[in-house]
Length: 448
Image (cartoon, rainbow, N blue to C red; front, side):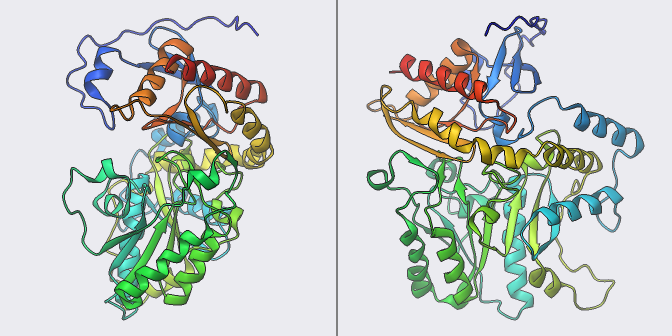
């Protein structure tokens, strides 16, 4: 249907882009053909020249409730006027305690304590530090080894980069942390191609943890951290039974299990947390992104009672955990988080995502047979579309797809190498799913 809404006015653009060194961006290419945004509302971004770009990426897996929600912006403004900042060390604000309680209520029973930080990267490093400290106070100080997974992403701190398993994110930074090992990734295209939801094949990949236990000794192993769905590497859902098997092995050997739910938390897979979808209770869950709908930086770690309570010993005037951030539980972020959780509840967005999942999968799977499509994976309101790499230019077809989507097809998507990732806000309509898939087809053909 023809969009007759007025085009927003163009926005002034700085004439010098050199000073800003952009993160995770091909800076030279970007500054030759910038992708500049000036506004956003509901399912669309507005470019500086006034074009409406349909957001098939929820910003960066963040804006699950869509853009420009007045409840959130008004809550932030009201909070800024009342209390702009309060020190989180030795002082508190009511909103932080309320938000922690509401997040804990959404989490599986037993994960009743929240430690706030400002990003998914900080959440990963926080969880790893809590794991190491817990074993220390439990009298098992030999448990210092951290286990990640190939193709995993846990942010850009030294801890998260060390347990992460995306080669390009690691190779510039030397040896990183010592005492780290990695499980194999769970993807086997020959046996899992074009899967909707969790692959039938692959639960046995969890058994590699037993090999690492035999290699290093259980009494050296502190924690295993995995994503229930590896998002940044190109959307790799956990195989059926894989996470339960990991839980069984970690419990058997006294190893903590951390779910990185920075992407999967707050509805992406149809539940508040993916742990609920899979019926698995980890020892910690990291979260960020969707907790504030991307409107303010915030992250955190949900922690099991048994871990939290182990720290609550010794003289009461002594700090139990010497860790935290200047902006932990920042007042504006807490206000954004509370307003965001209201929207998720009132609009039943988690349930909505669950109901849309099969329709979304049907639509995206219709791209099978388009040029250079090697595989499509869907889970929740998320999809990964693998395109064949160009000879001697890995990642170039994906990069060209990013540009074609933005400049030529009024579409925002994410790319991971030559994989196109679709992660629309949970408010997406069936018609908009169709529009997104139609535009993706044009992109795929444009870069053939």
